[in-house]
Length: 307
Image (cartoon, rainbow, N blue to C red; front, side, top):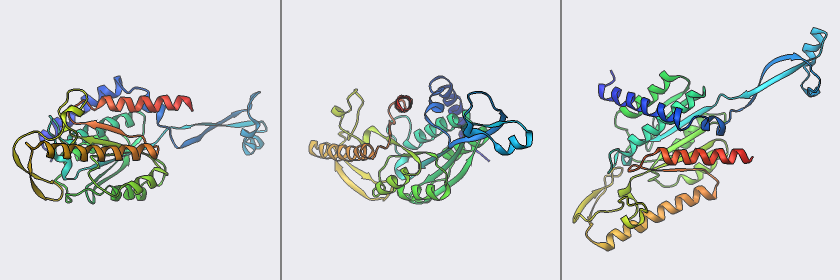
């Protein structure tokens, strides 16, 4: 039995994301994500100007006339959602946690996919595979995906192992797919696995961040608060390892060290994506997630027109 609270959340997300899909992302998804190739549709009588290489000699011989094969773009595609549900995704200093933002983005992408008759699959992971839903089509299937994201039991694992999720994707999806990897990337050792899987699939990292885990206020750029807040000496616990340390948040030196470390990790991560030509989206829990997604779609659409 699905709790009523989860049902209300799912309905709200469906309404909101349907509006975004129809008004904000109409056409963009279709134009930038192509199917696996072309597929045979039918044969018809030869017409002047047809490519003779398309002549179907077997049908022509049977019908005592010349027929050519017609092909159409194979639009159907598989979209895989790889969603981090580790302990750190339960954090959120704004109105939503990182996990809730991930669920809403997954819903938006799922409804975009079914609008184009594509299949959607889900891999939920922590330091292990928590849940796998094979790709299928249809609204009912997408609602099941969103319910699982919002109403799943606490994960068995607390840590994050992105490599495990990427390797699992390689095992369960043999044909090329579009894979959205949603995580805060608070993990190590995933870079080589991402490079490897990017050779076979169109992998798009979606980095979900919280301002309190990032830079100091002066570096937020648009007035949004970020970084540690002076609150005296506080006990800070890592939600994935359980390790706890005391921090003097009133110390400017401590706050600046935190900011430098966060800035370095973020820079190295983005530089890795750019160096390996992997498109990525950075989402902040304190700001609307639609804007960076639209920028990503527009960038892809612009690039597709140049090809």
